[in-house]
Length: 201
Image 1 (cartoon, rainbow, N blue to C red):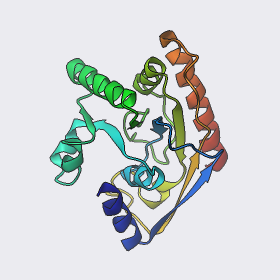
Image 2 (cartoon, rainbow, N blue to C red):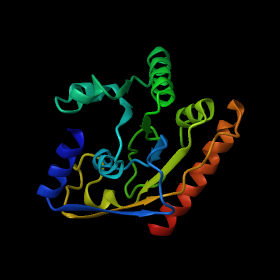
Image 3 (spheres, rainbow, N blue to C red):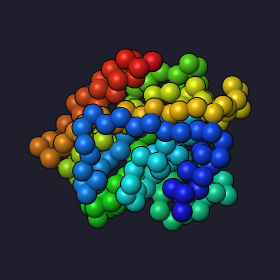
Image 4 (cartoon, helix red, strand yellow):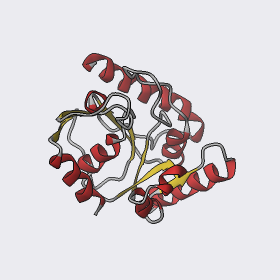
C-alpha cells in the first residue's frame, strides 16, 4: 500500500527515479539500509528502491500525519529522540525485526539538516550498533540529487519535476565484527557515502 501511494504520487507530478547499483543486491538477505536525508521525498525513494517489506525508524512526529500515522502505528518504528526510554524501545524493536529476517531503514544523519545546498552530515551510531549486534549487513544508499527537486518539505525552495538519481553502494558485511566495532563501521560507511556524494555533487 505504501509503495503504491508513493509511486502514484511521484509519477503524477512528473518525478522519476534512476537507480545505479555498485553491485547486484541479493534481496533475499535482509539489511540495515542507511540512506542520506535531504528531503521528505527520500522516504518515497526508498519505497521505490526496496522490493521487499521493510520498516522505517523515524521521528515520533510522523504519528501526527494522517498518512504516515497508518504505517508508524503498524509496520514502522517511531522514536522520540530526546527520550532515552523511547530510543531504547525503538532499538529493541529494530533488533527484533532484524532477527526475524526483516529489513530496517534508518537515516543515519538523524534528520534533514538546515544547510542549503545540503551536505552529508556526521552520522549517529544507532544503525551501526544494530548491524554489529545482529550481524546484519549495512546497505549504504546515496540519494544524490533529490534536494534539487524538493529540499526538505519544499516550503522554502519549492519543488519541480525531474529525475532523482540514487547510488546503491555494495553491502558491508558485519558478521566478523564484534559489538565494540560499530564506531569503525560507522566511519567506513560514512567515508564511502561521502565519497559517492562528493563525486556526484
